[in-house]
Image (cartoon, rainbow, N blue to C red):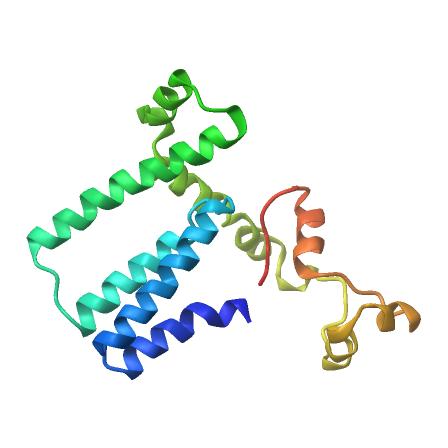
Length: 181
């Protein structure tokens, strides 16, 4: 259900042809979603969704001129730095030195985002290197249907299985990332 949330918002915008009431509702709902995710510790997966919404608004509703684009870019840069400072201070505590360190060029949120995206490419590289057949478990509809409600049925029938994210973390030998939703 969570994976359908954002496409539904986009569908509402497109389906209503950016009706002002729908536009206001969608942006309000998305802002609440964004704030809840930011306060819960999300490190910025919503940034890509904002980019999609801005592009969609530009392409289908009102084109952005240079002045508005510059304003949005500047606000976005400041916003990314604020989110990055909050994220970096969350574990270390708030101090003047911590804030200055978080704002330094070596802790740039743009550089961190590029490296984070690069780290998420590791599963794809592994699959390309070792082939798509490294998955040791059966890929059948029967296993999927039996495991939909509970994995106890699979255990009872002694059918070996693993969640994709769990198996891949073990396969790669990492303890982070790879949350397939």
